[in-house]
Image (cartoon, rainbow, N blue to C red; front, side, top):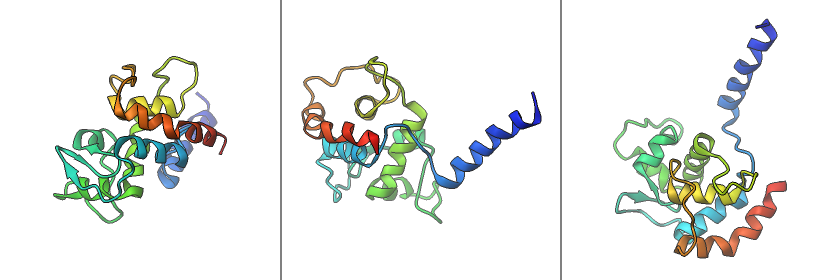
Length: 154
């Protein structure tokens, strides 16, 4: 391997660490739609039945996303997961990190987009192929879906 070829992956890792995670076709419109579909994007939603915040995030989902927390917080602090999951911007980071890890073409249409991220968010990263048909989540997602998909050109 040439020296230049070895440097490129290192630079990409450094850029990702410095500027956050980029996930293709996961944009603000898609995140808002996922939020709307799961809780009506209720930013005052606390924690119930092991799920927290406007994205209804479980502790396992948060851990799979790399345990993001607020700056200067410690992921091992009691309450760090809940505090991040209950705040929209921090919770968006959790969702983005989760999609970076599990993002794939769940519906097998040849494109990884908000439809796939909806399936991942609702079903989990390991069983995203499960249909969303006949779920309350799907009914709400279908309302905001056109805007979420249109936002992919952002």
